[in-house]
Length: 215
Image (cartoon, rainbow, N blue to C red):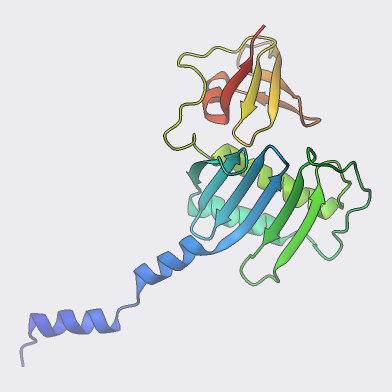
């Protein structure tokens, strides 16, 4: 007996898995979230189960949003690294200064087949080594976020100069202090963080959103 094409189509719709619902679930499931807030700035970084990276940053109530995407291999790599950290001891060892200008941060993980994890600390506290490792991994996601929607970052044709103070997409400020000998890297020193980073000139416009000072 011949099979009617319409009957076959109806059976497929009934029996096929609801892929759209699964995708919607992964888009809404947060694997990791790292937020820091003070009286004048807020940053909220989220990694979703489908590989989307979302960053909201700016003055409270005026945050701008940037998005990025991880491919499946990179997403699995982040899941593996975060899952490998022993989070049974994540107390904050030493308390730093407090106040409205000092960021209060929160880290939350909801990884598959792992118990939920939540920890809070202030910017200048001394968190455990495990919590520091989590934050260090999440910080690398900032490089995966594109410019804020509807916003330009640095001026067109921007060329870094020593003394320039730039604001990164997460709100942290960095000063250009030197260039590598081969001219292929820019050395920047954190104004708000005790951190030295090296960035290729072609990557400056992707990582930084504003030129705050120029000598």
